[in-house]
Image (cartoon, rainbow, N blue to C red; front, side, top):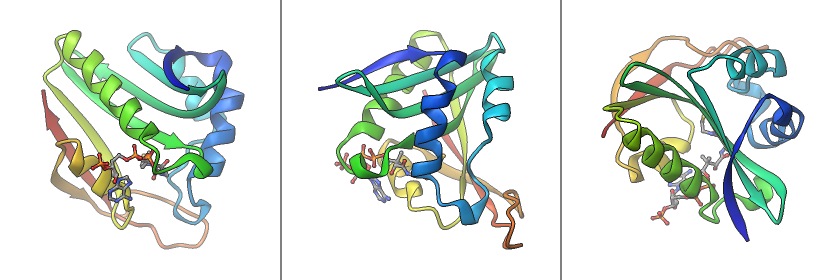
Length: 151
Ligand SMILES: CC(C)(COP(=O)(O)OP(=O)(O)OC[C@H]1O[C@@H](n2cnc3c(N)ncnc32)[C@H](O)[C@@H]1OP(=O)(O)O)[C@@H](O)C(=O)NCCC(=O)NCCS
């Protein structure tokens, strides 16, 4: 049974396990533990965790400034992808943002990442492109597509 709960800095080890499993290391999208920790200690930040019978199997991390929220990162354990866990995490993120009075959710997704289809299904629309946004070891430096959901 999958449940969505609030997480915090103490969940970073489990979250990093999912991060490394979910993201292809070739593209430079995954954050380091230090980047996650430095974000999670900020007050205007939220970590939602998907738990499968108590085990963390997905996460969504957001931050906000006034009424604009940014979805920083979402990931689901590879073996459980395609089973609506990402949708649960994203729906709960949207639900809580709306209840908090936020009016927009932005995100960046790598050009070529199939997750764009996932976001389109939840109502996000592409609004811009950031050239060579992602930095990686093999020098591909893919662009990011900025997407927006109006709440
Ligand atoms: C993107 C991700 C979070 C989606 O989570 P998921 O649990 O696999 O997705 P779900 O099963 O909840 O899918 C929800 C909906 O999105 C659709 N969807 C999911 N992945 C999709 C894809 N790659 N392309 C098109 N549609 C997709 C599903 O078909 C489903 O549609 P439905 O509501 O009509 O049934 C997950 O695949 C993942 O962790 N990917 C790797 C990390 C990543 O790239 N994160 C995003 C960038 S930050």
